[in-house]
Image (cartoon, rainbow, N blue to C red; front, side, top):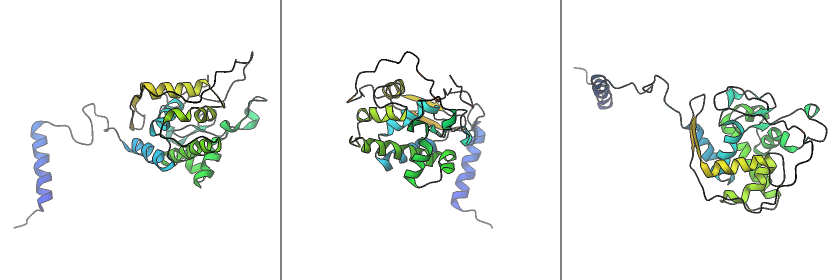
Length: 232
C-alpha cells in the first residue's frame, strides 16, 4: 500500500473541499484576474529603510511621478524612467536656460548605489533604491537632517521636481501624503499609502512670483490607466 505524505493528503483534502464549495482557485480572483501582488509595496519599504527616507514620502513622490507604474522599464516620451520617474533628458532637447540636475537624475542616482543606469531604469527594486539614495544624498548635502518626519524633506522634494524652494510638484507630493492613495498597477502590483493628514512642510519659504513666460519643463503627466505618459 502506497502512503501519501501528510502534507499531500492535506492539500488534496483542501482542494476537494474548495471544489465542493465552488470556491475560485487561488490563482485568480472572482473577476478572473490574477490576484494583486504586494512585492512593490515591500520594495518601497526596503528602499526607504535602507536609506533612512520616510516611506510615505517615497511612496507619495513615486505616486506623483508615475502612479506607481513602471511601464515595463520603458522610458516616457520626455525621458523619465522607472516607478520613481528618474530622468535622463537630452540637454539639446531642453529650452535654453531650463536645464538642471532634476532633468538628469537617473545617472546621478545610479552612481550613488553603484548600479548601471540601465538596470536602475528597468528594475523596480533598484529604481526605488536609487531614488531613495538620491533623496537622502540631497538632504544631507543641503545640511538638513535625514529625519523620520516627512515634513523636514519638503525642500529636497522640491529640488527633485526642479526647484530649491516651494514649487507645485512638492506641493502635490505633500498633498498626496496627507490624503493617502491606493491602487493596483497595470502589472498587478497593489500599493497603498496611508493618509497622514497632520504632515506639514517645515522650513518652507514663500512661493516666488512666476516669471511672465515660464519655460516648459520636461516632466510628463502620467495617468493611472495609460501605459504611456501624456506630455502637457
